[in-house]
Length: 169
Image 1: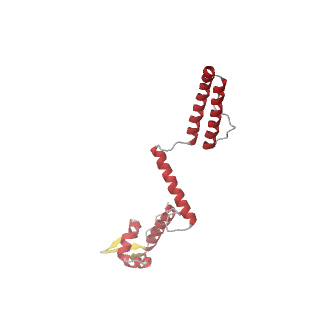
Image 2: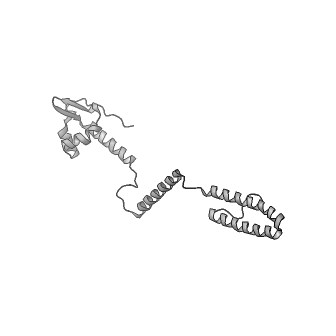
Image 3: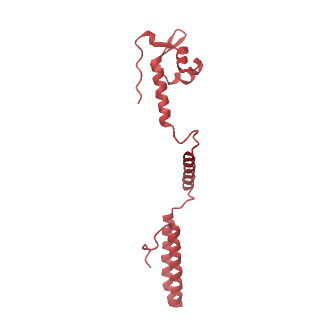
């Protein structure tokens, strides 16, 4: 947390707004609008109709505000046009779109799909026993070959190892 500047002890430390504005290279009106709101009340005082400010207090308040803005600023935003910044911006936009789609419920995790398809294959393999009983071993063998192909394709699409264990037959 920024420390508050101490109020001046000497009368000559108080400066008119017009003089302080010149120190900042701006007009008194712009100084009143942009910098003066940052200056603590302990560093401002009225001298009749004139507003006086403590120079060091103005500088410290302005500098603290500038540092705060610099810390809060995203270094990848702004006017930079490098390829790295552009790639970062596109990646950030893509991520935002994915997060939005996930919130809408339009995305399903690969693991969930894989699990559901493996469970379906297990049920079909159980059905194969009924198929064998009613239509013979050849019908069962054909279904098993089809399910093996199906399992390999599910594994390939979901990025799983086709040699790993699946649901029991």
